[in-house]
Length: 454
Image (cartoon, rainbow, N blue to C red; front, side):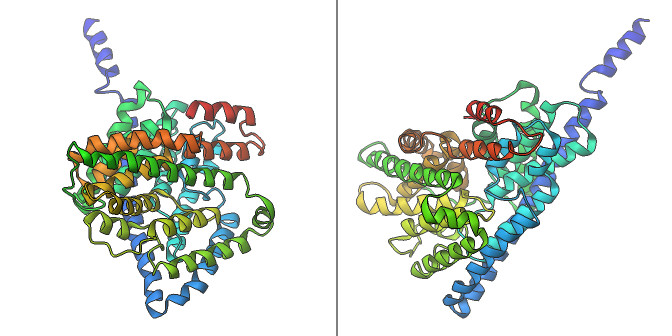
């Protein structure tokens, strides 16, 4: 009898429990799949951008036809073939965490939606839209994890929620090759809480995604390496200046996007609502015009421009910051799928370069990083994520204290302009829209859910 009791206790232990090991394997396999998909997505995005620029090499005026037609096609496909793929992807992932109806969750996080998100983001990049792939990768990663959970029929809603968190965080970790930022992003932006029962699985999934990414593409840094530092002294004035202008600009950008999600005012709003495909074509024309004025600098993710600014090798026009800002706003309000992570980092780098001309006492490379983190934290109002992601993307731990200080200050300033965080508010809007469908959460539940998220 004692031996039988010992055997039963041993079978129930975490080391031998089939149920626990099944959960672990799902998270581990899912993290590897997310990493592989994110790497493929990144490579395809580069090819899409290259394809567009090859067309521009023939004549930059071709953008006046390619961008309007491409954006119109993207919106039409979003509405007819891939409903649920609209937006940046992060608000949809946040909203799904507050949904209870499996069919409703599947309408946001399914493999069909994930495939559509990838294809339509690539289409936008191939047409010169100022969008990023990182936000879409969050939704794609969450969709992959959600699909695995449905296949093995996980018994608890909390475990499905953990899968969504792990998928989204692994998507960020793999997209930027920044595992620590993926973990912080899951805590600060996606969940705003951390459950002890699932935290280990989420952390492990992010770490595995980071390992898989490193194994497949090497230990690269997204924006290269920079040795920029900001010694204590007069140079720290740049922290205050960047936080002020970055927070204001980022808050203004977020407020514009929130207002656009609620519906643009006047004749433009009526036109966008009644003729969304034609409106998208008009936005494409505006994107093409901005690209021509900027010499092509505002097209695409802005990755190459931001990397050059960080390295101090940029020859961008002085108005790059403002033109990229406008191109990203127009791309978002057009209604095409696509993220704002990479474009926001490029806008912030451009802002930092502009501020560096005003502050010759501060190292220009350091000010570019401060501008990047200030604007980005002003947009997303997630200061820890912003500081960690910029630090990891440039492999510069020496700038961590200035980056964190700037990020916190910029977030506070941004909230003076935009009271609610961008992604949380867009998720609220998405939930409110979904509540109109049968079986969806009620509008009051949506408000309460997003109040908790924010």
